[in-house]
Length: 126
Image 1 (spheres, rainbow, N blue to C red):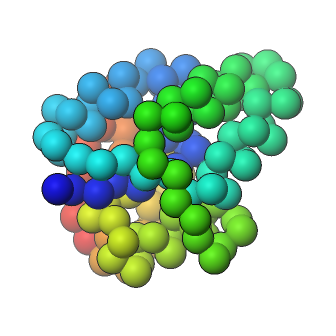
Image 2 (cartoon, rainbow, N blue to C red):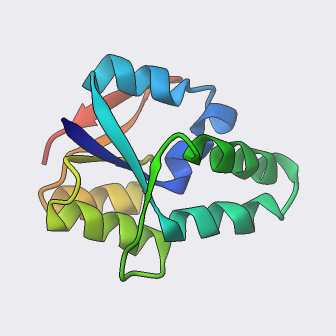
């Protein structure tokens, strides 16, 4: 089964971009296990306290993260934790719309699932 890591940016897409994240993953990947590193949960918690649109998106993202398995990593920074999961082969792909993280992942040979157009996801191979 495909294992997919989801970052904070992806979990915030439903509010920020109108993406039905898990429906899109079902369409694109089929059967998969979604995982979220603990530092991503901490980032969402911190962002949710900021209020406004970003805070609301992070709060929704934190709720959606409950649909994923939480994984521990040695990294404390969310992007580094997601990158480490991908680079180590612990996941088959990463869902993110964070351009610098996407570039790091592709350079490490990790497929990236990201936003295409207004509200659809697509997969980019390294």
